[in-house]
Length: 327
Image (cartoon, rainbow, N blue to C red; front, side, top):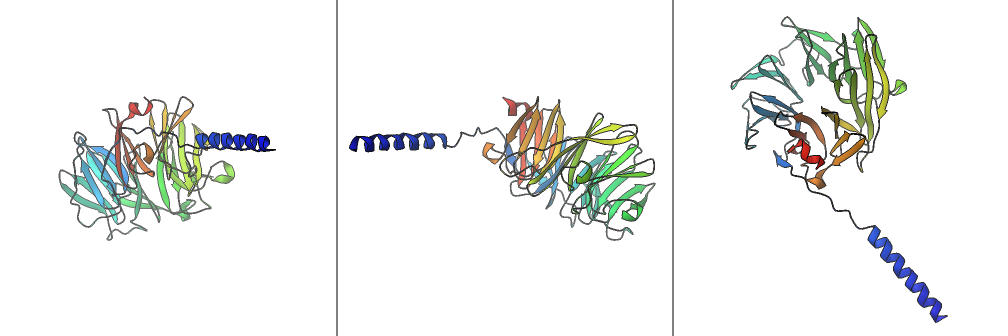
């Protein structure tokens, strides 16, 4: 009997040892991210006149890409910058109370409280192939044509008046992505005809966060809280057609995709809670705070010609040579 007890205790000890060894945390490789503007929420990054400009909750910062030193632009009373756009050698700044146009230390307003429009709270800026400026707001679309603002709302065919994405399909159509309405999704206008997409005809989620066109493909990021994914569309002369979805658990906190970028056949997905995920040659590479990223919510992705990638996050900017992420 004592012999059996000894054997039993030995088996239990070996079992506990095996379980303990299997449950050890994996070593997480630290990457060479350079982090700056920590504790500053950054929503948009652009390159303008050799500098990088970062827009976010507290305004716009001008960053020297050589030494990462920065200064805050003096733009008057401004906060909650949602989008930055470079056009005609000027920097367009879309924020909570309109649009400022900046160049050589000076700025002017082209949209503010005195503008006679439905809504001035800017979510997205886009310039079409004809040179017209489109603005996504909480009150529909604004289009600046020949110096005058024209509006487009649900009364004109939009699914919803909250617009977070505007992008052309390259063949005469234009896509509007909505957010904050469970019944919306994508509104698509071509040849004065509307077409709509939501979860009932393909989208992984009805909340649209970002999008990019790559050749004859359109990639739309979607999600809310821990659910979402990337919708892939084919672009044809007849319009856009939903092809498939990329729905992955980017990490421990779900599949919501927040931003998107493209580089050398690599699809870069900024997520809401899981950091950065890169789809390359059928593999997925994930990077988060444990790897040195400044914050796990990646809201903007910028590639520079020097080979570095800039990531705007909920709490600062992370910079790194893109190729080193795969070494």
